[in-house]
Length: 382
Image 1 (cartoon, rainbow, N blue to C red):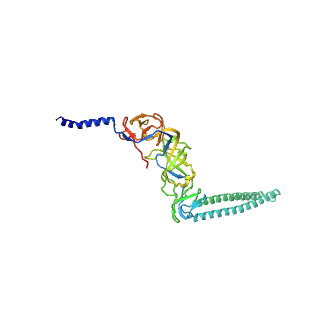
Image 2: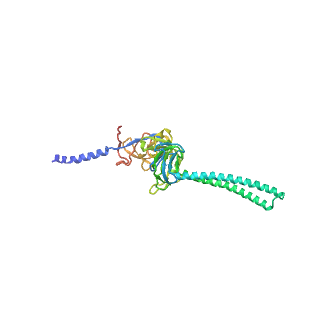
Image 3: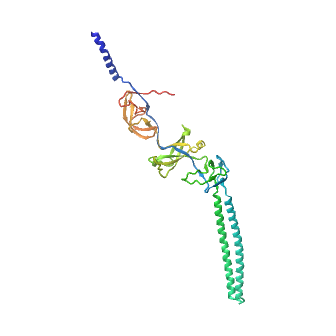
């Protein structure tokens, strides 16, 4: 009877022993951990939405009047020089107007020559009449008639001079109208796109009207990155600040650059955060040969840099000033620390932990709490 009672108590005794052992030897929670180390910490600002690689100069060109394309000398991808004709509209009527105006100038000059010669002759006749009147050889009426004829001839000469000015102005107006049918390159560049073919009719493309430009001209070998920065961060950005530019097309590669322009106004787009446009130049000229206009770009503008300071991974920080330290006893200790500069990767530590201390990098993970037994996860190199 006593033996049977003993066997009945065995499960309870075992459970109690297991509980006591668990209290004295709790199962350690595996946590991701990192050591407090020394290194570089930067304070930086990043773009809120994807930026874009742009050409330093880009012109989307269209003629200032509508017309039919008669000359299209270059193809897409061609290199052109400043002043090269990119497009010419049919303009025979305007050329005829220029020729007519030019002939008008020539006719006006001939008319001026004839009028002024006549004026000189009548002035000489008036002078002779004046001398004859002194000897009473002619009457006063004849002298007045000679002087009046001379005055009329002088006025006719001056009118002919004015007519030359008028016809010259008409010639300039006709030439200006003719120039509106010719599209020339404002700078040396590469033709990125042409929206039109020979004999097609094209129209101007003013801003705000959904009409494609006829020629898209890009300056080669000069690029910049343009990125929107949140209005809260914009006051801290100044021209000349260093930056890192990353491109989706070149993952894993940083392009050094610097801020060249900060927008002078805040961009207010519906349903989007208000931003300021910032432009950055690439520092290394060798990087420019790899770029294409339109690449998406992200920028990291460095506001301040501190070297050889204590730092921790930023993800280890919670509640702004706290971390979990993995003590030598295998327990988690919640500890308040002083922080300095911070970015997405690292945060500077000014007090609270020493170099080499092990801290939890996943403070929000399940089971992580003050006093919990823990151990660092083993990492394997792949």
